[in-house]
Length: 129
Image (cartoon, rainbow, N blue to C red; front, side, top):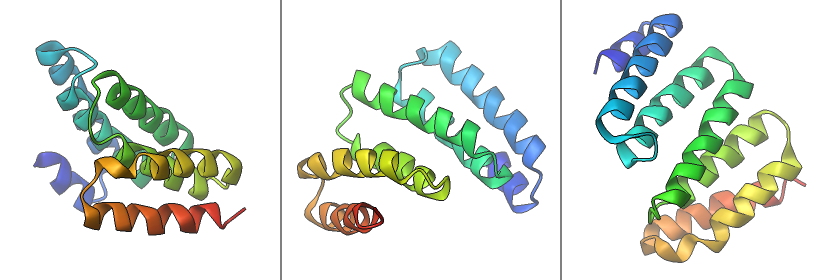
């Protein structure tokens, strides 16, 4: 909650600090491969995005994909699409296409409406070649 308030205030350094505290807490409670830890990383990735730090954002988002794969999460599509979108912002279209194609191949794990949304989003990225 405090992180959201600080984001609205555009207090990025405070958001980064709070996100790192949340990550440390989740790691102490449930290790660094849990869903809760991945959710804390998502907060950090969002803070890096807000700060305009694409390199750090991508590093964290890739870590989230690895965790989703390790815990056999049904939702490995969303983290892949987030990496693909971050790569589009970074103008790395080849790598973005790779993650979009992976997400597209995994859409059968989603509800029909989510699969349709992901398909449209992934196809839009794949057409950027």
